[in-house]
Structures are given as structure tokens and as C-alpha cells.
Image 1 (cartoon, helix red, strand yellow):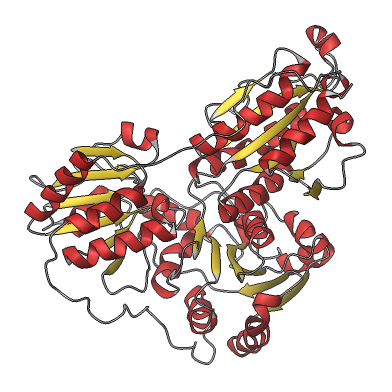
Image 2: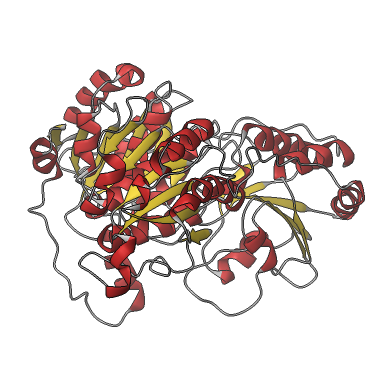
Length: 534
């Protein structure tokens, strides 16, 4: 008779969950020992990197990734990354090991209190009542992760895998789940009439709009409305071509400046994002009196908490495609393509800064390059200088916690080896997941990591300055060398301190970036930016 483990592997194969991201522990040995050859095992050296790599992989593939974690220690280490996966809308099936069911009541060594350890960030958590319920629970986790766009967790006691299970045992999960999308004609008409009646509409796009279908629909809609387009302040992806002439950049992160940017617009259409995500708190409304907010999103929580006058819970691509056909064409042709901001090379004796690096990347990167960003103090500069031109052209951390960018870039490249991938990181943020470089080196993942080495937490220093309440209590760390750490982890690296050296390396690496079969880290010495105004 087959075992629970045998049936589970059949379920994983049927669902396409045949790449497993993990850092193993003893409670997972009965599941992992003698892993079938058709199940690929990808090792990362910390659970945050495990989940980060899986998150990048899931986003790039647009389907769930399989994660295996070790009881309390593994799940606990991964909680921050799981929270990021949820906010970044990445579907993950997370199998967490547990002690042997036969003595769990006695709380033996490695027994975990796991049900609430990740808080509200999982879209679903299950501890199957019987061993024979495990395969069905994992199948359901796949469905829940796809529908909820986040991590779904199944806790499996280690002795469950060896339990007998008849292949006639029914699974408590549908074999196939269809999620058809349609258009509510009455709602499309209502929104179209609001847009046609607006004197000056503006579009705001978020991460949920970053699909080829939605972006194409939004381009058509923006052009017919002759409306400017803005990106949400903390979006993890670019929901509109950032080289389009109607694109006008990121929204500000504070309400006062937000009202200024949206002033004069009497209708704000928010697609695939929140209305509005802000930081820090400022009093007052989001828009001037009389302006109306309409939101279109596939995220129920985003819609339910929205202050919009009208929120539509639907597939943004299908809805906006119908909307673009329905609105009146205002007859204004788009202007010339948006020209990215650029800067001249540093003068003799002037230190390198992040904009100098961005200027060179902008000139050299192919249009389909995926830029993964975790450089909080220079994100605005990146957006202004290196526009995301294609779907998945930009990927950032929506949650705000550090440690996402490096592993996520690895996962993206593993999922999409056909696209060049560049990760732009701060030295401080790189330290949170530096061990993921070993995974990139071990599995031949050709990502270019560009690390801005300013020797400190530049964004935190700027926030303290803005607070005006004294100096920061933390020290800088100029002695940290990511290039040395990368080399120790088997990843090729180079320390760069001057502009000519930067040009030499970029001219060598970027033309062959698409075919890179090993990671390379550039540890670039830069001076912190003087201005920071999110």
C-alpha cells in the first residue's frame, strides 16, 4: 500500500510543485530522505533566503512555489520573509515539519507551537487531523495560495509520511480549480461614465497591474483619456510602462504632497494597488474636496479597507480592457517618450554616487531586464533614471523589511533564465540575506548584484535627520566588505571605487548578462545621497 509520502509526491507532480526550496531540519528527514529524482531540491543557508528565493521564483513564474521549513526554528526565522511574500502577492505552498504525532502531547524536543507563529500573514494554515489528510491539505494549500496570493502553510508531523494510505482515499481538495473572470457590464458602464464626466482624470497603478494584459489595457485607457499616470508610492512592481509619455512617476509617501500632486484632478482611478499607502503619518484627506476615488483591484483586503468612493473587486486586466473600449476617446495624441533623468559623470576627485551607477545601467540594460531593488534610500532615483519598460521590469519589497532583494533576484533568474536580472542593493540590506549568494553560486544562477557600499544605514540616517531630535545612536560600518563575503560564499566579486573602473566592468559584463551562468557581485563604493524626500 502506498504511504502518505507517496501520495503527496503524486499530488506535487500533478500541481507542478516539483521544485522545492528548503533548509532542512531533523523533523523533515522522513519526508526528504531519498527524494525522488524528479523533485528538484534547492538549498539555501537561512530560512529567510529560502522563502525569498521562492518568492522571486513564484512571482516570475506567476504560480505557487514549494517551500519546506523546519518546525519552530525554521518557520520562526522565515516569518519576516513570509510577511513580505504576502504583501508582494507571491503564492507559496509551505510545508512545515513537526515532531512525531505520537508524543506531541508531551511537548518533546523540537515540538513546535506553529499554528499562529506567522501571525495573520499566511493566507491559510492547516494542521491535518489525520496523517491521511496531509496530501489533500497540501493540494488545498496550492489552491488557497493561488486564490489568496500569499503563503499557505501545512504543518506535518514527522511520522505522518510513513503512514499507509490507500490510493482510493479521497482528498479534501479539488483536482482542478478554475477561476474564470468576467466583466460586470453595469459596473464597467458606471466607471466609464464617471471617467467621461471627469474634467481631468488621473490613473494610479500598483503592483497588481503588472501583467501584460493589464498594462496593455491601461496604456489604451490612459491614451484615450489623455490622462497622466502615477505609480503607487510603495508598489513592489511597475504597473505601467515607465517610458511612456504619460507616465509621471511615483506618488509621494505623505498626504500633504500627495494632495499637491493630485490637485486639479477631479477623479483618481487606482488600478491594482491601494488607495493609498503612505509613510509617515500626516493628517488630512488624500485628495482635495470634490475629487472622487475609484479603485479596481483583485485583492479583497485592499478593496475592503479602501477609502475609495467606489471600489471594484475584479480582475484588473479584464475590467480595464473593457473600460478602455467604453470610454470616450478625447482625441489627444501622446507626446514624445518620457526621457529618464540622467547625471554627468563625477568630476575629478568627486566620489561615486548611486545616480552615477544608475545612469550607466540605464544606457546599457536591455529593455527586458528585470531590476530587483532593495536600496531604500535610492529607490526614487532608480525609478527616475532606470524606467521599467516591460512586465516584471521592476521588482521591489512591498513590506519594507530588509533581506528580500538578494534572494528574490536569485529566484527570478531561476524561474526566468531567458531574462537578464540585475539586483540593486544597499550594503546594509545585503547583510540580511548574504548567505543566499551561496545558493546562486552553487546552482549557477547568473544574477548581477550591484551593491551600494556607503558603510551604513543611509535611509535610517536620513530619517533621523528629518526627525530633528538629535543624532542617530547606531554606528556606521565602513569596514563591511560585501565583496569579501561574496568570495567566501563562492560568488565572484569585485570592489569598485572609481567611475572608470565601473565603466570597464559594466562594459564587460552587461553585454553578456543574458547568458551569465554564475553570479557576480559588484561592491561599489558610493557616497550617501544628500536628499531623501519620499
